[in-house]
Length: 86
Image (spheres, rainbow, N blue to C red):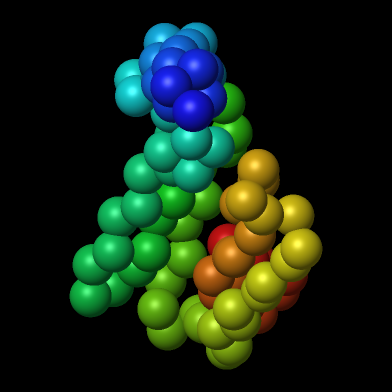
């Protein structure tokens, strides 16, 4: 019984040290979203900045996938005229 407890504690400590990195960023942490009364802007260090005016928005979609929890699985999409979506 005592050995089981020791193994559990050691497993937990190894997990905390090697796999649970508190400073590591999640995929979505790299996105910066700015929302004003006039527009929504999404910025990412490796992607082109996207901006859409609220008056251009025709539809707002909430898209859910089965890719979580390892990848983002919920997306909020603003659909506009002229295939200008973010």
